[in-house]
Image (cartoon, rainbow, N blue to C red; front, side):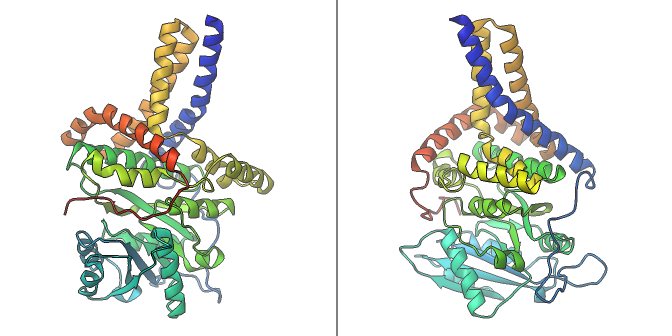
Length: 418
């Protein structure tokens, strides 16, 4: 009986081992890429050209600048929207080459009026009680711009609770000129030290939205799309019109792109910082929305199709996306590693103990990579003391999300302080 338990435990450790190994590979690649931006492949999937063959963007000395539409989907965001609109007026980019559009979606507050009070902001109001959610709002906005004859070289989506660094458009313009067509900026936290919850969210987003995409781009893979701070060229939206309506609409659209071999380029110096809820209770709706991806967005069926297509086309982008898709959330992986270590000690099996210790060490190395890249202050280090509570919280969120997956794409505003 003991031998059966040891073999079962060994199988459980191997199940988690490939994910930990993958995260460690990404961590090493991210460190190397951070130290040397030329490490790994830099070429994009294709060169962004208009129907006339004209190349957009400029870092080649031509002095040209891509034209951008900055789209801000907003649902009852009167508390935070003004800060973003003020922020967008201060970008280091020619003002004639970018236009801000706010889509006030099913708002019952003063979001639309607040946006109209800002100069050079175009406001579109949408009311549709049956098709609610950010994905529907984006689809509607893209269609309105097309109907109005407003065409841009690229379209950027920024959430109303965020701000961007002054060089955001410059960084995106540079990558468009280099051949990228789908881009994702560095999505991180604005109010990092407001509470232990925001501190831990900062660390978690650094791992998910910086370490992983930096490492994946370094090995030739694709970044995911994280909803805010993403940039799509006109050519991409013509090839793949926005039809993503699930709770995880950004991830759904990313999967559509990567299944067709399109590589999303991560742009670490295009930084977007978002206001995060301060308490675990107010994080509830946001976390469940992030984790609740519909059954059509991920799963063995999608992974198998990408695997077959990846082999057929010899495409590493698709194969790498499978590894990312099947990697369990960090809270589950860390919990699993600790459980296997305790079980190995109880069974007094040295091979199991060594393998479980390697799992724990691998998870610690991955987390340590993110923390080292943050150059944390003392307040951040104090926040790490709440990590076990945060992990238990995330485990609960995964449980709730798994029960609600695919049921709705309802846009539920996250509760925040002014």
